[in-house]
Amino acid sequence: MHLSNEIKVGITVLLAVVVAIIGFRFMRDIPIFRQAMQISAVFDRADGISNGSLVYIKGVRVGSVNRIQLTEDATVRIQMRIDSEIPIPQNSTANLTSLGIVEGKSIVIELGTSTEFIQHGGELQGNYTETMMEVLGQKGEELGDDVSNTIYELNLFLRQLNETLDDDTRATLDQTLRSTMETTGRIAAILEGKQDEINSAIDAGSRMLGQLDTLATDSRPRVDSLMVTVEQSIKDLEEVRLQLESATASLNQILEKVNNGEGTIGRLLNDPSIYENLDSLTIELNNLVKGINENPGRYLRHMSIIDIF
Amino acid sequence: MQGLKELGRYSSLLYQALRSSTEFSTYRKNLFQELVKVGTDSVPIIMLVGIFTGSVMTLQSAYQLEFAFIPLSTIGAIVSESILIELAAVISGLVLAGKVGARVATELGTMRVSEQIDALESMGFNSVSFLVVPRVLAGIMMFPVLYVVASIFGIGGGIAAGYFSGSVPPADFLKGARMFFYPWNVVFGFLKSFVFGFIITSIACYKGFYARGGAEGVGKSTTEATVLGCIYILLADFLLAALLL
Image (cartoon, rainbow over all chains, first blue to last red; front, side, top):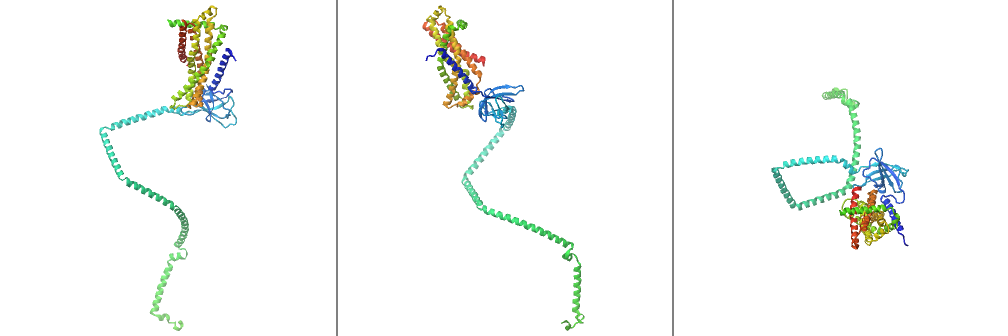
């Protein structure tokens, strides 16, 4: 089929126009054949965001920024095109943040829990998150002062050190270092000589520790039962102590009564009259026995042997 | 002096062309013939130019950025932006200065030295309208079309080269390309291709139209048309960048 020049030109131009439009939409990340959902969010500021910045939900790219404008109340309204089909809850938030140190800024939508979903032209709550680099930038001045102060002091210190280290000191230091080195060398030599002994000592030590370990492991059940017994004994002792306590209390009571002269024993201990009676009785009895010994007839006068028996 | 004379002749030729551009019926048939020769017939070579430009750019950017701590998507941004702003327009321009410029200058030069142009004029034809206007118009109209072809195949070639060499995954490439895609860059590229189309065809027409001295003269004018076309493309590229960016 022979095509006329007009048709050839027409086909070329038409194809170019179609390809240009498709390519343009493709590069702008606009769906090629359908309208995407437009939503917007208001932020305090929009550093690092530009047209074409990407929009993520849970790390998945769902769209891109296509318009940034200052509002009248000094905030920034960012319009986004969402290509994803997934519904976005009404109470979701849009965070303007950076995904990494070298990555540019992007918008991350945190899905909310609402059951109502945002519609075309809807608006999200915006939230500007400062990145590490920005925070660093703000703190940079303070940090710089600190660092320069530190360096100044370090310089001062170094200068003083330099002054202190005059030639004599240096010589002394040198000597000290040399003798220290010698000492170290000698210690090393000694250690080398004793290497075998040290090794065997360490061996013996570790063997002993091993034995101790097995011993401890072996006697563990016995120690345990012993502990149980000891605990039981302590409990028994406690009971004994309680009983003793009550016994002491009653004894105290008794002694008190005795002291006060109550009861038989009390009177016995506290009333001297019995003793005195007994004493006088003993004297009388003595006299009586003596009298009988000296003059038995006087007492036995009226008694005959027959009467007695 | 010689330069000023050339500039004056060139300007007066353009002025004649502009004045006679209203005589559409005179050059209508020629125009479509030229549109096909400049545009449609150049599409294959421009596709080739685009693919190789894009893929070489990708491979070399990946090689240069291999050890730096930058995301792979940067390569996509570099390649696609370079192609859209600069390479698609300029490299196609240089290629077409050879292909189109040489052909136009040779055609007109041969017609001039074989006195066909004089014959046309003696028959009362407006030779400028009949020969120059359709060629320059074809350049102006078709170069933007060829820019589109070069851009699409350049970026496509870049993605393909990144994919097949394993240096840049297509997703990373596109991420970078989209992140730094500004519509103004495309407008700028169109503007460049428009200007280059005008420069190449008008210089070629001028050199061919005023060719003198037989076959040798035609060869000389063809060479001059190609070389001057290339030089003025680079000059215009610089001026556009300096003035508009």
